Length: 143
Picture 1: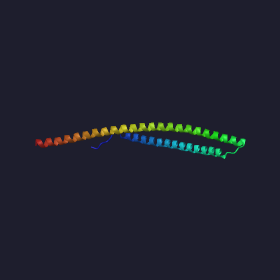
Picture 2: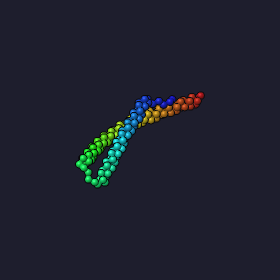
Picture 3: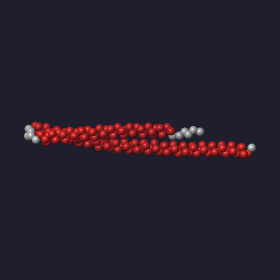
């Protein structure tokens, strides 16, 4: 007798759910990585801009100073937005990790149930086989 798991379709669905959660987590991690890259890029540009302005050392007109101030404010506002997006991405990654953890847990539970059913099936097969061997031995002894 071949073993057939009674909850095989459910296990298949749980494996699929876990796979989907892994993909969603990968997407969220990719978004977070892109935001981190953008943040480092903007920070690097700001630092080089400020360094260039500090190294110029010459007196500038009022319009240039105002333009410089507006630019620095824009970059700081952009950094604030990027940091907010980064926090949201981190929260999203955390949520996806928890969902993946639950999907893995659900799949693992079903796999344990399958192992127990397989063990019970194996025991039944062994008892049936032993019973058949005992009957054969009894019949040959009684003849």
